[in-house]
Image (cartoon, rainbow, N blue to C red; front, side, top):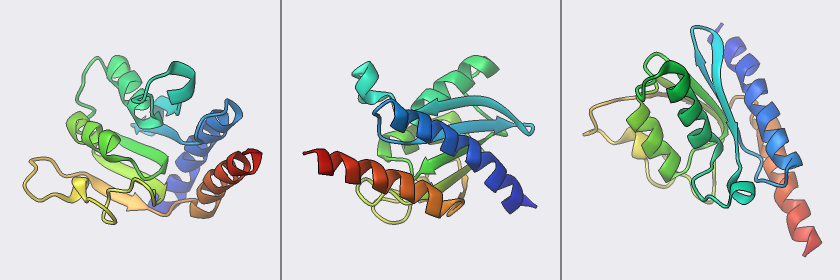
Length: 154
């Protein structure tokens, strides 16, 4: 049942990744769920906003905090199309999200198990459940296609 729900919600995150791609941004999308309802979303906007922190996850976290009127996003799940970078992982820890579901590993700036396992550090006082690989083919494809076309234009 969980896997079926994860696929359902990841499709929404993928929609926001496609929106980012359409706007010329690196195609990453994120949503935050609470009580089986989307309370927040984000897509990369670093180029448009001239802001290196305008990652999909950060935007979704900020919106969720405003929606809940609390920086602690307890009992929520974040779905994101790409493994969060170190900055986003730190923000996810600080937000107290209960569960993180990401699709594909970030081979360049990975941190969950493959480079620096920030979310798996044992001496932090808050543990987040992590799942990966949901809609991996689709989410990997959109990233690969984006960078392929970008290199081709050069």
